[in-house]
Image 1: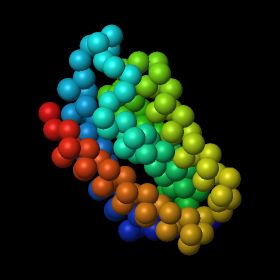
Image 2: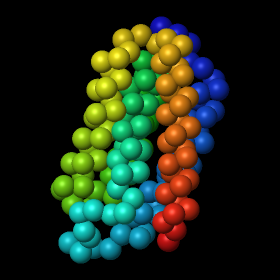
Image 3: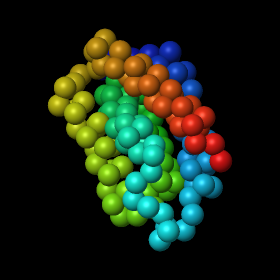
Image 4: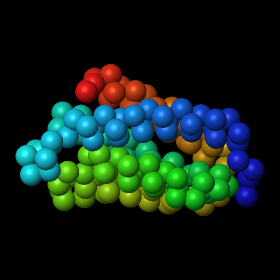
Length: 138
């Protein structure tokens, strides 16, 4: 097993702050669950972010990051903020699981390619979080 890349660990912190801020913002903006529609204008970006969280959860563990359930917990935060209906929760869960499974079929060991994928996902996830915060301020 490869030693975790300290640069990836530092970069992962940059995704967390915007993601937590996004979760809080979306929670505050949400009305009662019964009044919330099943679709929102940012759903495509939210589903992509969920998929990224699933892939990062798998790949970081594969590469020895020893973060436990950290990325799954961030997904749970996102679902708490955005999973206002059973259908929305199911869509978010499906996207997370798709990201996880897709990369579990592709990578069995940590490799330079897996490390590159992690870096790209962390960057894209951070951009998505920042973009959502800017596009849908409270």
